Image (tube, rainbow, N blue to C red; front, side, top):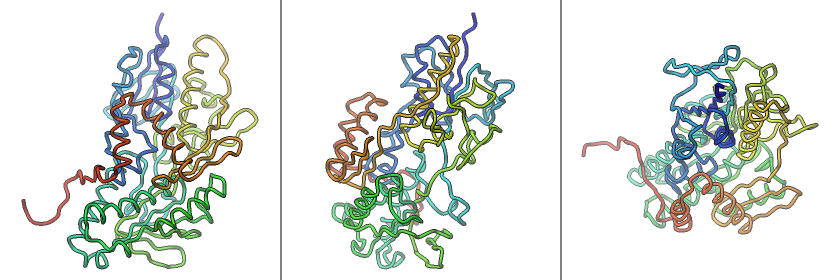
Length: 424
């Protein structure tokens, strides 16, 4: 009897969850990704602001499945999927046939047609994004120290676009980094006039959270020196800053883009099936494609329905990705056993966002909200559990904890070749 082959595209939260669900089962799983590591996305902003090393939030995929002989990993980029022949093609022209397919290719930064945004901003969605942003920020601080006349007398401005969780977390962490740069590293920048500006087109921060938590986030950022400007839509971004709708110009040494994501430009967008808002693939109640029950689309790439009777899509969160990936894996095993698939039902476990050290917001099911130090401890505990879940090494927890509580020991390294003039 031939063993059925399952191809899982993407090693994010969704793809990894699907592969784990199938590990040890009587199927052959081929996991494909253009990166050979899984990234713990909730900590990317800490890599970007020099709180953590890239290796602290990434782990080799082969190591994750080293004890699962039915799961193999292929390092490569899938360029196309033929739904009729059940075959995927990689960038090197290799083809792989499948009996079941799980597409978990995530999303990408969405610039929504804003002029210059894709060219002159730094998104924060991949490990590479985080490394590039860290290099930009640290290089700017070093340049402002060496040549203050180029930065308004040593007072660079950093702009963060987007008042969701990523924008709030990044703005708060950037402000802490600037404080450390002056107090601990003795960089000669003006601590009073150096600014972090957070822009959002909406009328409050953390729009998906309870309104009181959005107010708390703003008050906390205000108290820590972040300039929060709401109802401020960006019209254009250039190498020198951003122009707001209405004409106001804000000069900036670096612009961080946390303004949303889209599925456009990803593999999921090429499947040739119905898609909804943000390019998210429309799926059936069991997360399969209409007319192709052997194909499931999960995580950020899909408009994942909340459950029976609730067709409205889930938010693009890590928990949705994990739960949808697991569900897709279970349905493959049900179909293999000759049983009908089941509809997906999202179990809301709440939302969290950190605003800085000892300040976070946590919104739990049932209306319970936590904020301040208690919210920060809840955020810290949950993320450590998930971090350890995929790294499975206590030394990582110890290193991460030490760097977080002892910020001066953090990895403030410019790990790229930067032309600073002259020769060595």
